[in-house]
Image 1 (cartoon, rainbow, N blue to C red):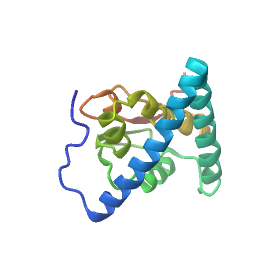
Image 2 (spheres, helix red, strand yellow; image 1 turned 30 degrees about the vertical axis):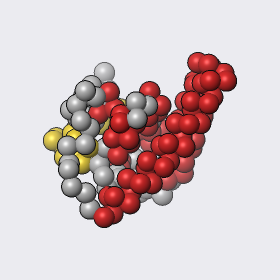
Image 3 (cartoon, rainbow, N blue to C red; image 1 turned 60 degrees about the vertical axis):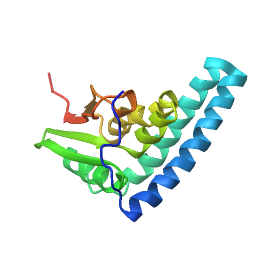
Image 4 (tube, rainbow, N blue to C red; image 1 turned 30 degrees about the horizontal axis):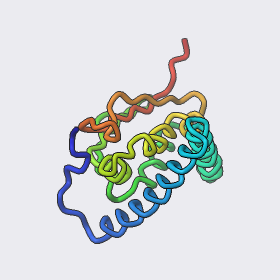
Length: 163
């Protein structure tokens, strides 16, 4: 498994953020684990669905504040909410396609180090429904995930073809 935290020195703000992420992720994982113990896979799926629905509801309210539904606006908004501990570069940017390469993610770091990547995957699974809720003409794909032990997350946001 690849170390999801290639950045070895963090700023004070990143350290504080990491502590909050770790606390939230520990509380979240404990809740998910208890639901799985009591309700099995149905409990896990219930938690997953509730998490994704709550995220979409929250982000949809944020989308209402944005000036338009373009890919450019989505990417500007997305980069404004990325955690300080996330390290990324934009490797492609056009009016119809934007590709990110994330090499560090606070969520992946914590969940991978605690063998809770299955629980942490909920965060990754939110990307596609988030952009679809923003604009159903936009799409998202990913082939590599830090949460899965890959060297990076390769997020690709793009305008769907009009075939």
